[in-house]
Amino acid sequence: QSVLTQPPSVSAAPGQKVTISCSGSSSNIGNNYVSWYQQFPGTAPKLLIYENNKRPSGIPDRFSGSKSGASASLAITGLQTGDEADYYCGSWDSSLSGRLFGGGTKLTVL
Amino acid sequence: QVRLQESGPGLVKPSETLSLTCGVSGYSISDGYYWGWIRQPPGKGLEWIATISHSGNTSYNPSLKSRVTISVDTSKNQFSLKLTSVTAADTAVYYCARLILGAIDYWGQGTLVTVSS
Image (tube, rainbow over all chains, first blue to last red; front, top):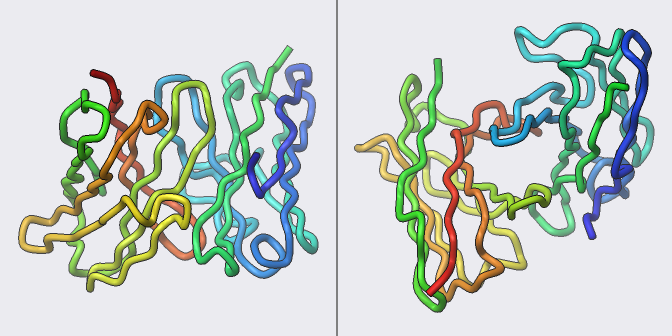
């Protein structure tokens, strides 16, 4: 069981908005940056969000990140069928002195 | 464009040592950042294994620390992973990656390592 908790799955219709949560503690999300990754089957993860809410070059502004206390969220607006993928949150854990990932959330665009 | 490429055996026998190398192009490891390994068992989530700086400072996943060694060779612009005493539980896709502050911005394509006799 991952230290960072994500819902196993979320779903929404094309064009709608979906939010994926990531819950941690003061030793990780509460006092460290959160990042988000998108992974399609058979491919490497891709960085979507870093430093809680920053987007790398080339990532559409339909993807946004936020953090409050020991929890973080990834929001995707204007859902497209091409957004169907697994999404992972990540953070450093100061107690473990290691990087953590959430268990992943499978997004289905109905 | 930064590119990372994993290389190494795709099949390792139980109790033996898994050895992988990550070649980096488009960026000199000596210039900075951290470099690391992450793995993903089939059908499961991501697990951080180890990280190393350009100067050789290391950090390891506590659950794997006793079996893992990460090293860097700046002359060849590559870094490596050794995992000893492997079991079937170590079967996974192994990714090498570049780590920036709080995130992993470049990933290799991944290499499947199967532990089986």
